[in-house]
Length: 164
Image (tube, rainbow, N blue to C red; front, top):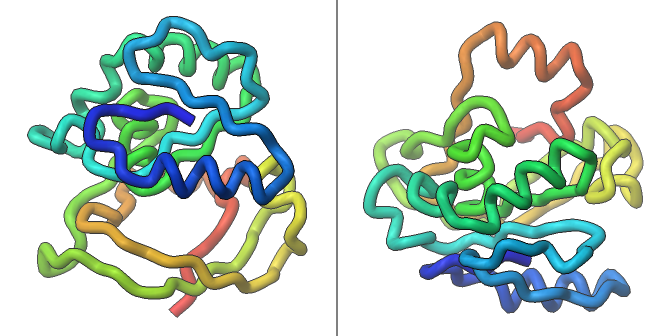
């Protein structure tokens, strides 16, 4: 997992990796090597204090150049909260995350439906399975233009979907 100045959930991500039977490898944002990891998690927090757009500064960290190359070659990458924002800012994911409706921070349980089990992160689930995860975000409203959303749908890249 990659830690940036301001990351908060790297300890929780390491614990999750251990509970899943893996060995977490701590990567610092200014490294130039991924140390042969099998997957990367970008945990939540407030990278660089989120002084610009969330993740906008973190995308320029040296480790991100290595991550971009490895991700494009198929390395599984999971961005949680601020980590997802960093992946959008680094153009590893299309679209952007914007402020929540009413500009409110949201902290609650969120129901999702698993749409695809073809990822390292979802293969233990069944397609259509409903799961509940904790949500905590101030900028969690994903936005993309209609053609990008249509391409994601057509390409089977929607992995989970929000439920009401």
